[in-house]
Length: 384
Image 1 (cartoon, helix red, strand yellow):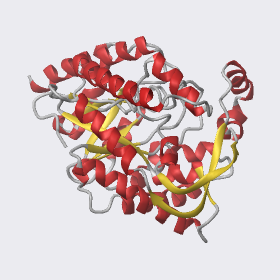
Image 2 (image 1 turned 135 degrees about the horizontal axis):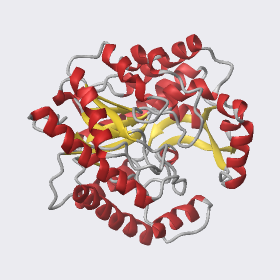
Image 3 (image 1 turned 90 degrees about the vertical axis):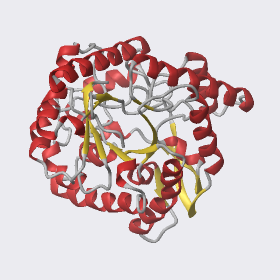
C-alpha cells in the first residue's frame, strides 16, 4: 500500500455518481425490466473509462471504478453467491431505527418525498458458494482497460463485508448463524483474494459494524460489542492469507442527511474495529457528529504500520468544504500518526445505491477539488 511519503495522497470511499443514461438502465434492470445486456456491458466499460480518467484529472491519487458495474455496494453480491433465493420483500429497517423513533416526523417526510424502491429479500436456502468469477473478471478487466495510459498512485476495488451479506440475505439453511457467517466468509474470501491477485487493493465496505447499534433499539452498547467481535472474527477469516498491506477497511453509519444523534461513538468500538486484519482504516471524520473523534483515534492502540484514511470531506452535506479546513483536518491526523501514515479520504461513498444520490454530481466533483487543494495545502505545511 502506497503511503504519503512526499505529499499527502488523496482517495475516496468508493461509489461515485453514475452517468444518467447508465443510471436509467441499471434502474430498469433492477425493476425486472428486460435490458440489452450487451449494450449495458459496453456502456459500463465506457463509463468506467470515463470516471477513471476523471478521477486522475481531478488529482485523486488512489482511485477505483466508481462501482459503476454494480446496482449497489451490497446487493451486487446476490448475483455472485450460489445458494441464495428470493424470499419476499425486504422491510425498510430505518422505520424502526433509533433515529426514526426519535425523529418520526422528519423521517416520515423523507420517506414521502423520496419513497424507497422495494428491495427483494434474499435467503440462503442451500450451501453457500462463490459463483461470481465471470462477473468479477469483467469488473477487473474493465478497470484494467480504463487504466491504460494512466498512472494513478494506486487502485482499489470495493467489496461488501460478511456482516452486511448476513443482514441482506437471511439464513434459512445453516444450523446456526455462526456456521452461516463462516460460509459467507469462505465464499467472499474468493472475491477478496482474486482482487489482490489481480494487482489491486481490496476495500471491505462494512457499514453494519457501526450502524447496527442505531438500527436495533433493543441492543445495548455491550450487546453490540459482543455482536461486533463475532463479525470481526468472521471478516478476519475471510481475509486470511491476504497481506494486510493490500487491505483497506471502510465503515460508516449508513446515513447521509439526518440528525444522527444515535450514531455509535467510535470510543465504544475502536478497540474491536482495530482488530481487523487491514492495513488502512477509512472512516467518517468530517461531519459534525464525528469530527471530534480524531482525539479518540489519537489515543487508540493501532497495529504497527497502520494507515488512517479519515474523511476530510463529507457526503452528509451539500456544502463544499473550504480547502483550508480540509488541510486543517489532515494536519490534525498527521500530527499524531506521522504524515506518511495519513491518506485524505471521504466520509463515505456518494452513490451507494444506483439512483440514491443525495449530493449532485457537480457538487461531488467540487468537493473532490477541495479535497485535492486541501491536501496540497497540508503537504506544504507538513513537508516545508
